[in-house]
Figure 1 (cartoon, rainbow, N blue to C red):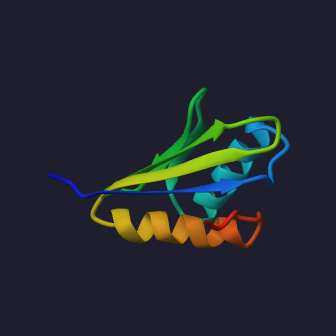
Figure 2: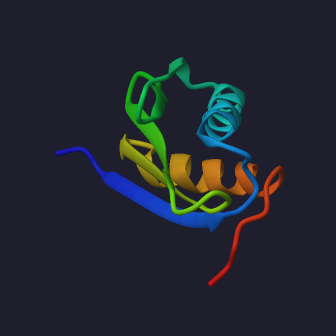
Length: 95
């Protein structure tokens, strides 16, 4: 059974879901994931042995919870890499 790893964070850095999805896609492409696409509820892509998806839950007009999930051989490192990359372009609310 493949590994499953996930992490979530809260941010007020996006003006809307489309902007959030666009930033997620940009990061996933930088991570060299293939077939990255924006769907109605998530952004996903993968490699030959790992699949990753990111979704955003809008709490109010300014706050989002983002959840990054990955399964496969590089599940843990994929999620951690995504979180570290997004921290460089948006503010993550700690705690």
